[in-house]
Length: 338
Image 1: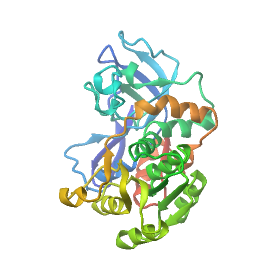
Image 2 (image 1 turned 120 degrees about the vertical axis):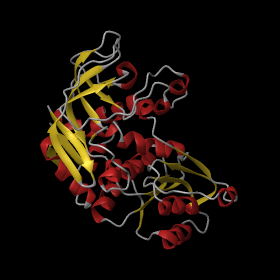
Image 3 (image 1 turned 60 degrees about the horizontal axis):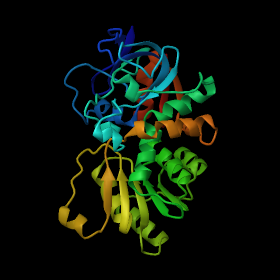
């Protein structure tokens, strides 16, 4: 079969790769219904993360189970399933504590930008839907696989509560779905830092109450002005740069919390400066598996429509254009159909 392989900066190819098969009794093979390009894929695509050899790409997925290993009990052929970018057995101490993305048997998912995918630890990673969903629900269900689950974790880690004031740093898919998550959790005021009109519009639809276009010192000053010099209760940091993290910390009131889910690149923190802020800092790879059942239910019940972040849909063989469009900010997120 053909799948997506990254050879180096801005060199994405759709070429022949090995068709996956069951290699462990805990595996499942799924036929992909939809996959997509992730914002984190752009780090190696832009050359900001080294690619030392041709690398299969893709870690967001949903589809129909075709085959399961002999030890799989909960997942059945013919089911529609969604899984996380990090596999989990869902039984180890870390999983039981709600941190499945730190499972002792974790494997990072790759190769999802292809028609067929092998999923290790299938019983603990995949969540079936009650029935085969209608085609119009596929984008929103795919969003639960990563970007919605990651935005949700950012809001949880930032201790978003009813009536609180929240700021979101980053207007990519994760940031926008962080807005949706904060709204679902009852935030009274949601301030989005964004300079892009199309993204601002979706942020408003998801529940943003305010838009701040300034960045750096000006952005911090603007948020302090909007909160009468206090700062916000919670910040969702959804970028992963030094500027975004510094901005998040400086926007947060003493005693407030930051949920950081942007994969850090070149971020360094001063322990002494952080000490005197009284800011809570929590984040990491989102334990998407913890939230999947709830998020899937919200989608199936029609309470949320996270699939709005997909503003470009392409056939899978045009995956390179999906990367280009996101790199050039012509698209928020590219959905790929085999």
